[in-house]
Image 1 (cartoon, helix red, strand yellow):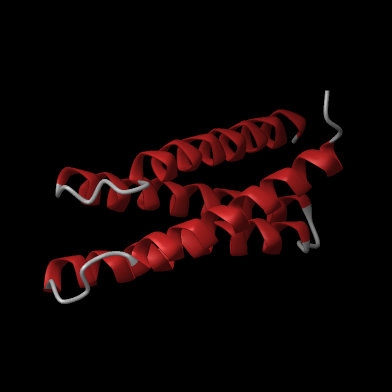
Image 2 (spheres, rainbow, N blue to C red; image 1 turned 30 degrees about the vertical axis):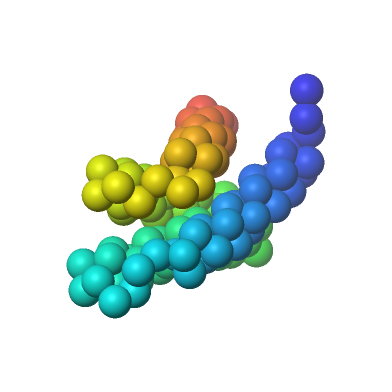
Length: 121
C-alpha cells in the first residue's frame, strides 16, 4: 500500500502528464471550426486546472484548504470529461479514449482522497 505522501505525488504527476497530453491533443484539432475552437478553449482551461488545484492543495495551510482544492480539482476533472466526451461524439477520436480513461482514473483518485479526508474530519 502506498503511503499518503507517495499517492499525493502520483496524483500530482499524473494530473500534470494528463494536462500535457490534453494540450498535445488540442493542438491536433481543427481550430478553423468555430465550435471546436470554443470547446478546445474550455477543455484547455479545465484540464490544466486539475493539476493546478492538486498542486495548490499540497501547499494548503489547513486540512480544509486541502479538501477544498481537491474538490475544485474533481470539479475540473468532471468538466474535462464532459468536453472530451463531446469531442468524441463529434468524431474527434485520435487519442481521445486514452484521455477519457486517464481522466476517469484521476477523478477516481481525487474522489477517494476526498472521501478519506471526510472520514478523518
